Length: 115
Length: 118
Image 1 (tube, rainbow over the protein chains, first blue to last red):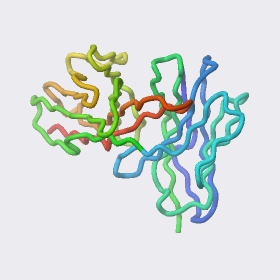
Image 2: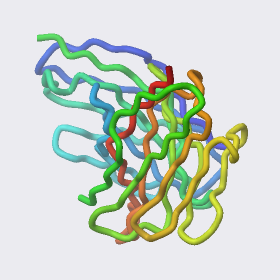
Image 3: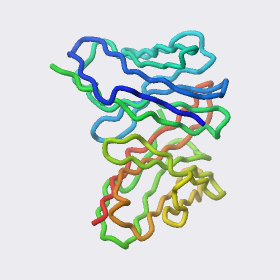
């Protein structure tokens, strides 16, 4: 069974500062993918970034980067230069390549950016 | 990126009625679609996996007779909440699995449907 844990239910960050959202996972699979999604109040799920379990380099997408520490089974999301529009729920998710490609989601972190 | 639509975006209905939610992949064919339910301030919970041309696979605890899923074509899956009750009020989100073009296989999410049962 897979499990995703996001230990921060809510976080504040000052505008223009960087923030790290934590995500740890538990799986016995060797091949898997890790995703981060943003969910604003409108409800849509917006894909942010992906990290494969065999990727040696940390993924980056614009202001988003993923701090992947495989031995610790953590995949923290770093958002640099926070903007007011970054205020939203953020979900970490894992896809097992051996489990029908389903996504398992963490409980989410609500990020609030202060002006 | 690929586009997935859901219709309707909002539904308010009386207890006992059935509600159908459509999920469409607009610019790609999706052999697999997923249905999630999200209660307020909670995470997404997978309800079922919908495969084109075959029966859906339901997660443990999800009543298949309550939540009917039909995946009649490569671009359309429907979720019907039968005899809806107030406890079925939730945010329902579908996602469609895009054809794999590399290591990253992405599920594209629809905008969601908010169901309120009175």
